[in-house]
Length: 120
Image (tube, rainbow, N blue to C red; front, side, top):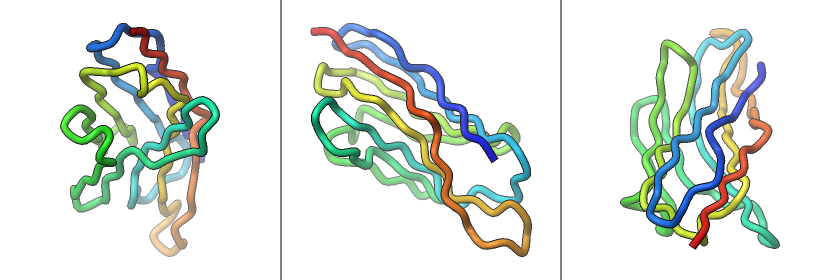
């Protein structure tokens, strides 16, 4: 299984971006999907997550501005980011816990990271 993250770029403050994370390979079910970010000089931090039943959670710093969603048919997870601010500048990573077959345990996979830069 591989995760391919995309959608990062340079945007002005107040702008929007949508990140995508496409999972490929043998996938039976995606159970927990999440986005993390690592800001310059800081440890990686959790941004948002979504479980297979649809419940979503967000870090306080992005609540009301970011939305996590998924496309089951495409095995893709999205992060819609609105009203971006300079403090959102970071490398964003997707993380998916999934089962490759009906009888396998959950495994954890990470995307390669996509850089988001927000100018003031």
